Length: 127
Image (cartoon, rainbow, N blue to C red; front, side):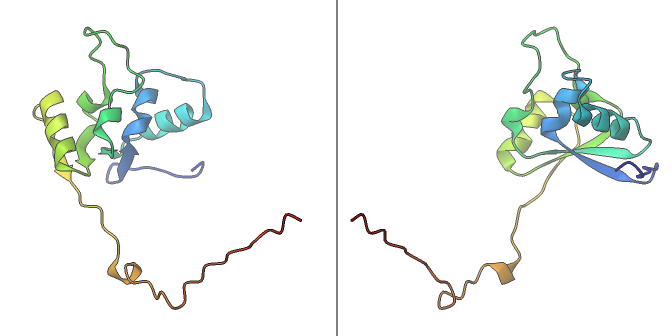
């Protein structure tokens, strides 16, 4: 990370849980410093929102507080993992580019050879 250089043509995906660093919580932590060095780079940023109900975690509960990373010009899009998340974020941030991605597992990992699967049970003699 120290030697990484992010350029204008790079895309950086930011998990939604890191939004708390944008609103100023824990500005002096190592994670916060890393967040700001990435965020201030010239690269394009995409938020990967894997749990839409964490979107406002760490935000003040004031209806007058509208500062959010999702409205920033540096954020070009948001990815979500469910239709529910997409609908939620469309409601909260109308006009934001939101793309749904489908989580999947490579089919070669779906089949288990149960004959090779071993279960070890150890009994303990309490005498």
